[in-house]
Amino acid sequence: MSSRFTSTDLFLLGSSYCGSTHLGALLEANLDATYAGELAHLPAYVDRYALFDSPLGCLICSADNRPCPRWTPATMAAVSGAGPPGAGEALRRSNAGSTATSLVVDGSKWPEWLRLSLRDRAIALPRTAAVVAARSPFGYVLSARGATGEPPWVVAAWWRDVYVDALRTLNLLGIPYVVIRNEDVRADPATAVGRIAGLVGSPPADGPVRPARPTHSLGGNVFVQNGYRHESTQLLERLGLTDVGSSSWEGPHADAVIEEATITASLRPANREEALGIASQVMQVPFLTEIAQLLGYSMSVEIDRFVARSDGNAAA
Ligand SMILES: [Zn+2]
Image (cartoon, rainbow, N blue to C red; front, side, top):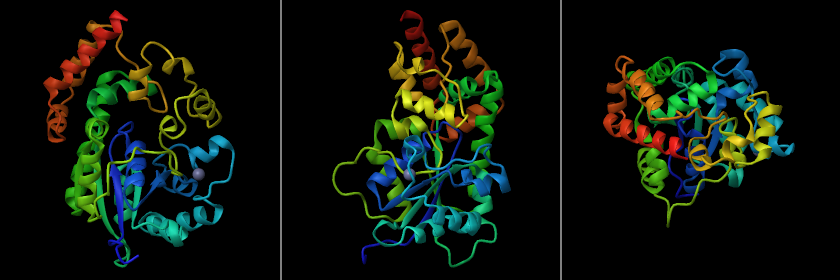
C-alpha cells in the first residue's frame, strides 16, 4: 500500500466512437486503475442530466444476465447519490480493500460531464486529470453516419464541436491533460499507457504492455466488452440500442468492421467516387481541418488513407 500514488479521477473526453472503452480497458489492465465506464449512463444521472438517452449497467454482466460484482445495488446507490463530483471517489470507496485503485477512469466523454464533475467540487476529493481521446474525423464520420443516417457534413461538424468544447473546457478549468489518438493506441499501446501514467504520476507499468481485457464498466462498446459475436448483437437488441445484423462483421470486410466497430456498424463508401465526395464534405466543415491538426492529424495523410481504403472496397 505504501507504493500507492495519490488518487486521481481521470476523465476521458472525446467524440463517440473514439475508442474510450478500449482505452479504459487498457488502463485497467496495466495501471492501478478502475475503468468505471460512462458514469453519466447511470440511471440517476440519465434522469438528472440527460447526457445519454438510455440508462445502462455493466455490459459484460448484462450480457450473461448475472449480477455484477463491481456494480452492486449498494455501489450503484452510493455513486448515484454522490453526484458527478463525488462519483469516482464513491466508486473507489465502494470497492474497498484489495480491489480499490488509486486511479478511477470515467469514460463519459462529454465535456459537460466534466464541467458538472468540477462544479462545487469539494477540496478533499481526489485531484483530476483528463485524456482527450481523439479519433480521426474520417473514422468518426463513417461510424456516425452509419449510426444516425445523417450526411457526412452534419456529423463532421459534431466531431469538430466536441473537440473544440473539450479543449476549451480543459484550458478554462486548468485540468492537466494529454491528447491520445485512438489510432496510436492501436499501433503502440505501451506509449499511450506510458503517457497517461506520466500524467497522473502513476508508477510505470512493469514488463510488456498487457492487452485490454473486458472490464466491469458502465455502457461502452459492446463489441470490445463481449467480443465480435452473435450474442453481442442480441444484447444490443435487448437493450434497444440497435438492430444491426451480425453479417456486418462476418463478411469480406470483417477486419475493417472490427477495427472500426461501434455499437452500430460504420457505413463505408462503396467506391473511390463516394469516398472523394465524403472527403470533400468533411473538408468543407469550417475549422474542422484546424482542429484535426491541433489533435495531431495530418489531413492530407488522412484523406489519402481514407480514399485508398475505398479502392479496396470496390475491388473486393
Ligand atoms: Zn459486471
